[in-house]
Image (cartoon, rainbow, N blue to C red; front, side):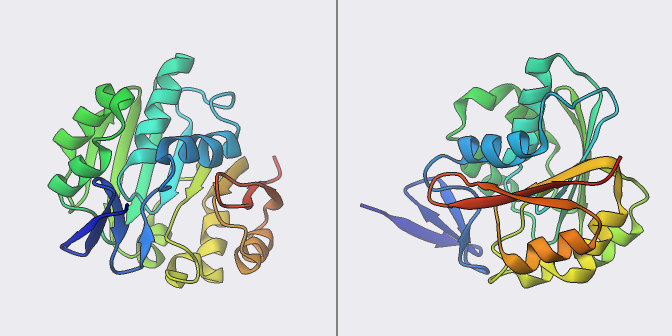
Length: 225
């Protein structure tokens, strides 16, 4: 039986699964958050095969940081040091809520502890295993255009487009395209037609793929090299 308690804009289901009260959407799969991350964001971007020192990952929607931890674990297992990560987040969790949300993932302790030590809702820079990580706080519609980097892979992980449309607007998806290196990629759990069309208009070749768990489909894509 599901149980939940609410605190500071979060609803906790089954003990440690965080759901945003603001967007009425879970931060990760209720079935298996780490398996979902691996399927959607790592496999969807063909990682770790494409990793190299200096490879840049960018993420819209840092959330619990689970995708960052999975990336660090992926790079460590592949023996690739010097991967870079930048995450854009408008509503960062408080440190205590982050710790609770990540507690179920016992295999990621080596990366979870450095993240918890570095975590600052105002933004942070830290080394998470083989990954140099930065979180930029603020509305991505403002902060992404100010970023000077170019991503080799994007994790597009905002809350569902129907509930968090601001993070999936055509203008923002166009900015994602402009901030993607030649041959760069994206992956996202959503297969919403409007999102796929916006990413195609941004220059990606977009593919609909099998989703994880209860989600029938997801999307991924590549920029021309």
